[in-house]
Length: 321
Length: 243
Image 1: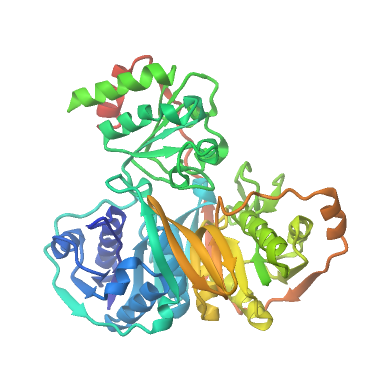
Image 2: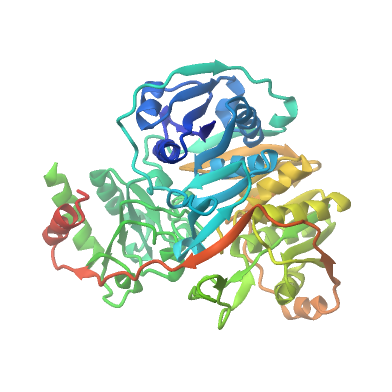
């Protein structure tokens, strides 16, 4: 039997969260004795087989169809369902993401699979198949038992280190006949910042809040993010006021992040904002108000004016290089 | 246009999350329940679409009788009728199965809901309903316009958005800024009292998953406050080992 992993690509690279999913599947396979197969849709990116093999894949099923690059949800679900049968998989592993979620939901029905999302650890197999998931936007965990033979696990970001000790995986090219109706929702265009670190994928996130007084001051955040190789985020009032685009809004109703380091500048720390960041390994707060609620959950903090502290911090980090 | 809006009944975003019965049940004591914030966006957009081109809005929740005040609130915001499928929502597949069974009978043009519930955060139900009904599903939707039989959608992707054209019927998981939340006015609240709210029986046998136990994350230690960026960089380098 095998474990199938659905991966995503972005700007010519395999997303790091997808590599984490491959390594999670490899760790699971060590327990269950299953081999890891990866289904890769669209053109292979440079060094793909090697990278996937290092992360723990035993084989790659490459499905090339020009129409797949666009990421049409139903078409991706159709391909993965067929490959799942072909490789005789019982478990599908993927990284939680906006496309992954949408594809996995349709697959759960197709494959009659029990589904667990926001998985934060390997399953406990002593009494059935029980996985721990993050719920209530990071405010709690639940242990969920899955009863079905087919299973789908959507893995939360940053819970599985990417393996690099495997060897290159053999690639099998497969053609899949895609019915026209799987493309009935047509993607007519995309609007995307290029060359930027994707917020949900980022290992370091620098976010700014209303305390920065206006969009004209965002250079502070940009410079610090550049110095750290970080993604930029913002609080809800900032995106609501149109200072920054919605895809940068971090919080309960925005993007949930789980970086190694979350750096909050001039954000007071409303409970709804904290819900989007509480999975971060370390949180740093810079705020001039010592009573800001964010200080209660942060690891490190500086009470001070962002306009004075942030440029100094950027300079200190650039000096490290 | 005939619109179905599926809503969740979830703890208010400021709720303190705690569990009872040896960590096997969610503790509802002192918790205020609301329409899921994402579902609230879906409902608001449904009301706007109805204002533009007429039609009807059915609001649906899979839940026990304590969710009825939440359904009444949806009626006050602008839904025409409410359906409660009488069952504890065991998991996403269970809820999707109940929604699909109901929707199959009614031939809705559009099925809207939030991108995810804020209790389990799975974001699965819309896709599952789409697959069960054999129609497209799109999520997370941040803009939705309908012209004739075709919808134009902006869907949020990591780092931006993509534009989608899809024919009715389909399922959408919604998020901001698709519409502004609507606060019920006095007239809405009065009229909600006389709008139909019907409870129907659940038919889905069992579920594929089971909740074993809840756990709260460990308490955070106190923040280390420093005065200078040099001290902060030192902590990040030598304590957190990140830089």
